[in-house]
Image (cartoon, rainbow, N blue to C red; front, top):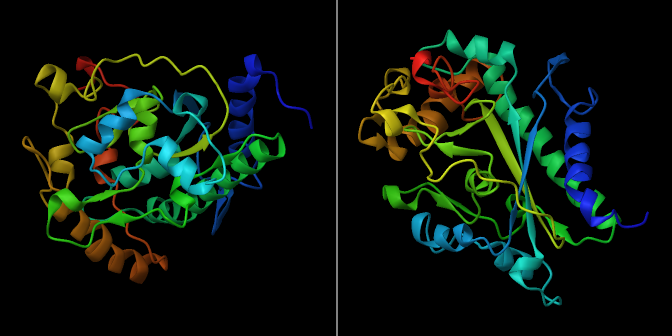
Length: 292
């Protein structure tokens, strides 16, 4: 297959990602074969030399990769410039039935939410591999950072600053114009905060998506208006306050207490919660004051 013309690359990749998720054979969770796991994706792009990726080493941690670092680790025999790389990012919005079920919960994730957290992320991994494969078939070197053998997540520690990873999908989405962060650290997108995200780094030049915001809290009413805070009472363990998000409390609830519950009650061995992503004004949209 010939290379796609550069002017059409963004549309082509968007159609590849949306086509995968809109394929019922791919977008289903176990025990819910007649339901989609995700709604129609959002897709955005950012350049490998975007200053944000260098800034993440300060704001996330020095272990966080720039696009060039993970690309050269994966393809050490190639010499490339950061401006030659594009980060392809997507948002997978939760479905209405999954959000509706989770709105009713006050302590643990609903069954639908927990299963989507497990099986839906497996779909996301298959999507990452699919995008890489399609790009490689068209002679564009590509990789999915979180599927790299070198990818690491640092969470089992009492030091809150260590709750980080070598690649953040949410921060790639922020750089790609897809959303900004809320009080609970969730990413608020055009389709809301109830979502998952993924990304691929490729040796291809695609114009970056516009960023319709000028700071990382632009879509959160708590930070912009001093209002809302609806996610605070949604947290069953008090991990969200006006001071921000306590990652240690959140981790212990999601990946220890809740994991035991979802395994014993739903038969899925996964840490899940998502209560702060549902029954809040930013659940399914960028909120406005009248949503409070």
